Length: 113
Image (cartoon, rainbow, N blue to C red; front, side):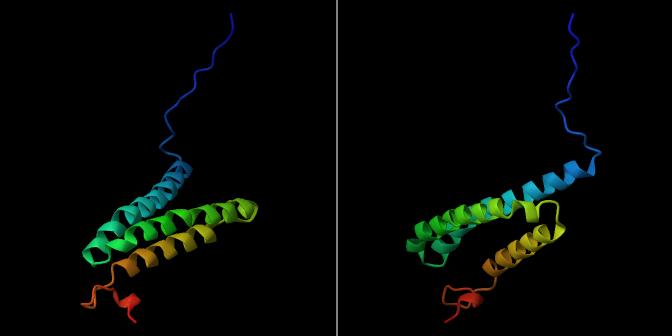
């Protein structure tokens, strides 16, 4: 009779690597889905509903070249803390820029003419 090994399908919650991977994946998903949900409402509220389609297209299509760059640079980026910290900081700065106060003309202070 053949021996069967029993595999655990549940992750080892005490392993710090599991938590790091979960936080990285969860954080990137949070930024992506939050931006996709926030941008249309923001543009409608600021009186620029015609920009919704173009903005969402640019936001989502911009991920294709970024994915190719990451694929090409995977050997250099793997296992390094710097690129992850830089991505987190840039994401926070980008979300923060969206949340800047309005100047009364329907544009955040970063977008003044």
